[in-house]
Image 1: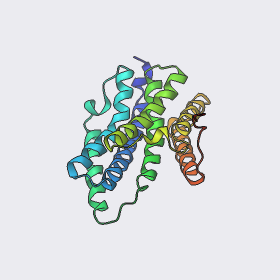
Image 2: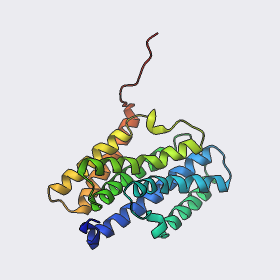
Image 3: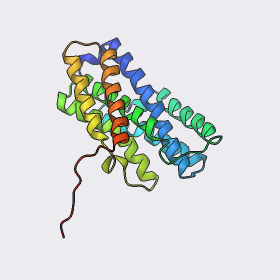
Image 4: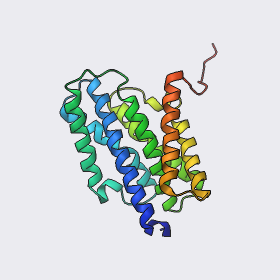
Length: 212
């Protein structure tokens, strides 16, 4: 176990970044499920899967205790976020792309949180950055699969790419001596803005094409 795990500042930063990520990612799950007109149970299940799925996979791969099993506060936050957004959404019309902004926020927060968690476990920088991508995207993949849709990350405007770039930026800032909190704000903000810009201008990676 990496000694960085015992640093109170790092642990506190990881806690709050992850908590924010859980809340906004769960909200995106509610909005996607709500648009599909699922019932309350379906909405809650998809919200919890979206909010906790990516971090769960990260922890299993890093051979560390799953974060929401150790601290049920994350589970409670996901559940409360789901119920709150469900109640609000019943009063307003949900559009097909309503989930995109909270999804971008969750991508940003989980990308940073996943990277930091991996670094604290002693993972090499490239592996840590990819753990950030996995943490940021896999909850959305599970959300889309449960909603019977192709995963957004595989066919959307720039998604995992901006998360990976932001994770690498986060590591670069930390290596440069910047504190965890300002580095997280800058890197997370960069991911969020880049994702919204990609949506606005339809920026994509090259796609595989068939030649008949």
